[in-house]
Image 1 (cartoon, rainbow, N blue to C red):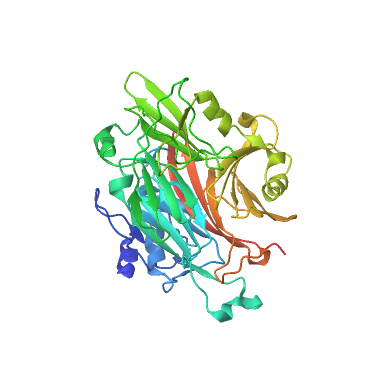
Image 2 (cartoon, rainbow, N blue to C red):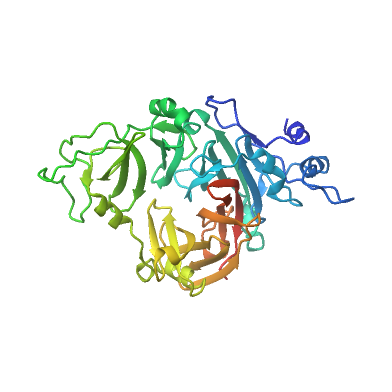
Length: 440
């Protein structure tokens, strides 16, 4: 099956017919391809030559080597080791970011309750991609084998959900993940289809998706008593009955921590776009409290790096004096923005991922310069963007090895999203799987 797909130049993860909902399709993948050694392969025939000279299937993938992938409407395409992502450019349809097939959100779970460590990626307009670390034999835990390991990739095309909507966010929950989709104003031909679908979905640790009730903005009234709060200021789910405004749909959601989920709702027509903002204790339970736009923006304003968790601060400072605007997320589901100095508009963009205990952090700039930090130990390195003029846009990290080790010597594994853009379109996009160096 897979050999035939390679010979035809097809994707290892193929999408189903439009508007069909498919279960997880691929539990085995073909390995990377090698182009002919007799003469250089041209971009036109590189993929075909690679298939003709393919090594035996390498499944699961080795976790100690960087792997590059392209996301496309026809599937997830592994890039041959001797070629570049450009060989798949003809299969990629350029589009604005909200409509482009790209890794739009990432989350990771180090594994518990019998679930293996995994990274989940929400691929815009396509569906879900799950990276799962493979259990290792007991012999693999020996120090001399610590750098070895393996992972498998499972693609789940979900065109019924993803084709008419845009990925808004993905967060790690105590048991699984929370996914947000929204209708982008560009998608005029899918308004009816989007209106029939949900906006929030719970995803269990194995990747099964189930819809949650739609959120509505609480009715804003200066004279309405505020909902009950706990001693630490968090909204209590048992808040009094709330009245809601109709006609609005969830547009953006942020997990600010401490029982605080910030939401923006929009009601847009051809003439005007109206917005509402709210604070929820748990998006799955609804309720909530209406807040002003000023309060919403104040909650999301970048905070000073000096006040960040030590591991995040140390990693960011190790990247040099240039101002950084860091979008930091972590396994605890929280997210926030941090600024090292200066104004956000003058800073270089960077992404960060923190371990559940916030003792470890990886920061990677959009240009690939990266730093890994834990308890005063910091290591800098560089991740090369796979395409000229590409930039890194987000990441999720497993700070554990395939052998199950979680100490600094194990390094870890990161899934890093990349994009090549020519405003306003994304011209090519994908991700790389990056083994992290150990902190010796």
